[in-house]
Image: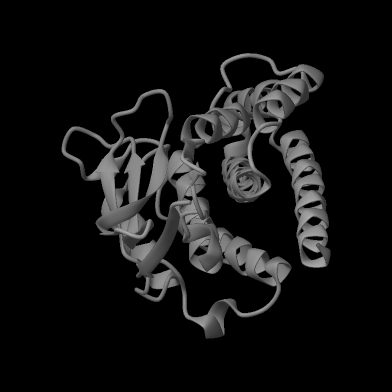
Length: 272
């Protein structure tokens, strides 16, 4: 079994800022995000904003504790994305991989000069992902293992993750979706499926947060009149294609089942 150990640097806020329950950490992230988009909206009148202002406001709210760098978005399938920045890796012959993460890469739509963000609401969306990561250190860890008894489950994990988070170009029927996911996850060992589902659950929560703040920022003040068509488009997309809230409920149900099964097998092993 290959284990992955993640060593992080400049990816989370000090413990004194984020200590407490998961609900409290989420509340902290939400509060930071609201402060951020309120300030960003007040500093710009149209859909764009200066990259320098975006960087300054983020650094200020994150106490200059989180390292990030903005790059032009080149994957036009998405308006923007955020990634953990992998700066190194060490391989142990015994089967352990140590990954060194330092901060984040944020990909946003920039103008030709690279000095202005052409869609500040996309920037607000990705900033919420950054706040969620900064307030929840565990979500920055790469999960345990992909290889179990010399069988590589990476492709299956990727397929399941894509179904929950990336296959969003058409309407989703939850009954068909659930059946397809159960078929893919059925033959995976519990430990691997649990790790997979925990990662998916964290990502779904952050997507719900990010789209929520994006819509709130677009509807703030007079923006509701100018941005209403796009707000409606996003809400239709979330309702028909993404269905993140329904998928989160299903991921939690699957995770509960897998955890119960793992505990049952562990108990039987101890009693044998």
